[in-house]
Amino acid sequence: MNAQRRKSWMWAEACALLDEAERRHRHFFGLLAAPAATPVWEPPADIFSRGSELHVTVALPGARADDVVVQITSSALLIETTVPPPTFAVGMNVVRMEIPYGRMRRRIDLPPGRYALREHRLENGCLFLRLVGSTL
Image (cartoon, rainbow, N blue to C red; front, side, top):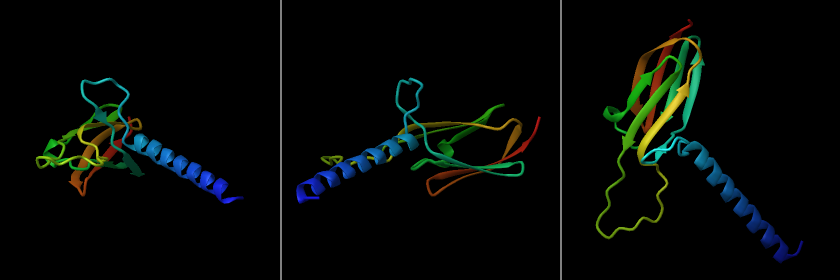
């Protein structure tokens, strides 16, 4: 493989990796499909189960505990908050801004049953929830 072909191949590989990284970023912090007056971010969540308990971790960078609303419906867990954008000094230009700001909302479907919120804490930019359920 000559040097020119190798450079072209490396460039194509680099572009493909950047495209994949962007696609994954959109997947984890994608805008919700439902139209809204302002953009709504859907933060990523991890869910683990142990017996009748569900442990849910939702990434909410910059959220304040007092501003996070958690609701349990008959079929889902709803989490909503608003994170204000940072303030900048006069004359400062944004070079890159990747952390999501504004409205964040996540709906997580729950397995059938009734759930009670037993633990709720926000630390290190993540919301930790522990739900205890009973089957119907």
